[in-house]
Image (cartoon, rainbow, N blue to C red; front, top):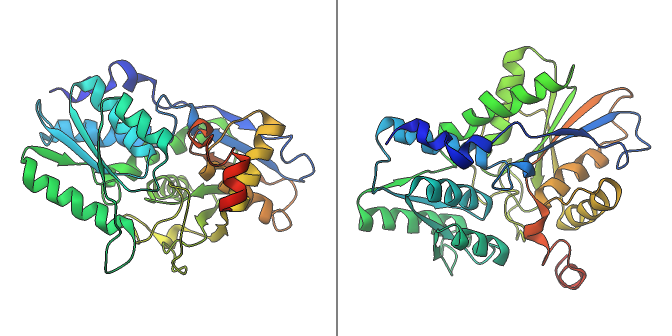
Length: 318
């Protein structure tokens, strides 16, 4: 296989997403907020970028060949991105998921040709699903033989995708960035963007947006209903020293801000995007007048119609 095959067809549409002012959502703020609409990637999320980079580099190194099975543990968006790329490249893709993965994500993965491996029970030692999913990935590796684990939590190509594409696009579009707000899970987006900002010499403050119940930055572990924000373990690629501020958001804040974003800006965003914007609102009294805030909005809302945008679900769950 040729690594450039990944850039043919759907792969060529990844990146160059819009950066839009959010004037109505923050109409009373003395600072400006711009949203990087990563939901406009063809797979519907920021995960398209690392998926493309990881697969392309694995083909280059010979780890992925014709007949190789690609495997990943994902709560949703990375799986959709990989399923889409593998479909285009004629590769088998297996995704290891747990019961928190939304039905919309599962339908999309299957529609794109991906196979689902459901881990129904959490890891007995930790009580969380992620270690159990990783254990299932390793078991599949032993069973299948010719396979490649993309390993978004430990693969440097995850953050390098954002170092080389996401942040340069934002720096090109804005004269300066005083604050960067970014959600965390695998920590690929925030690490790549933060390292690029630091290397550019920009005096930007990096604000990590984490879910209540996540342990990435030493928080108390708790239940989390939305995939894609927070984690039950510290990802190997995380670099906490790059972060200037951590803001924890609740599921209710994610829901409320998603709905207000839809009403005010006509943007249908996912739960993680709502969390990022909720974090800006929580710091509005601390952000100086005239500051430029850039927010990475990683996910599309159509996969959350039965949760974030369902009155019945939210009344029962948040």
